[in-house]
Image 1: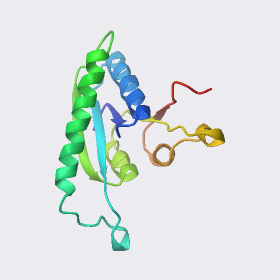
Image 2: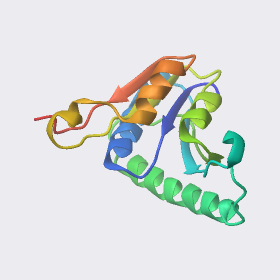
Image 3: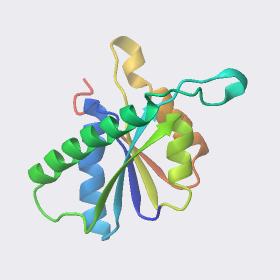
Image 4: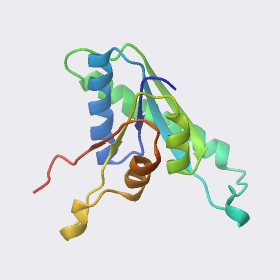
Length: 146
């Protein structure tokens, strides 16, 4: 998917990433793909376990991502992205983000925060994507870093 890919998981951190990615896509006149991943369960031999409810959960995740994206677009001040596509897949977040961004210009992800010293660390998905992606990865920090 060429353009900018933003990972959305419903967290406040990913909402900040979504808003940042929308502004960046507008500035760059780049298409924006909002990707949400319905977390798969690892089966035996590292494959994805078959789950009959998987397609339903993936469709629900897509619907939730569409609502969140529409809300962010409505609150966006200034220029808007030329195109925004919301997609959902079933799989492992790191693998799906890297696969989706194989020909992307950039991946945008939110960091995660926690209490104490751990809030200085990135979330595991953001860290792994940053290490393995074949394009630039931008990690949007939390608003309150005090």
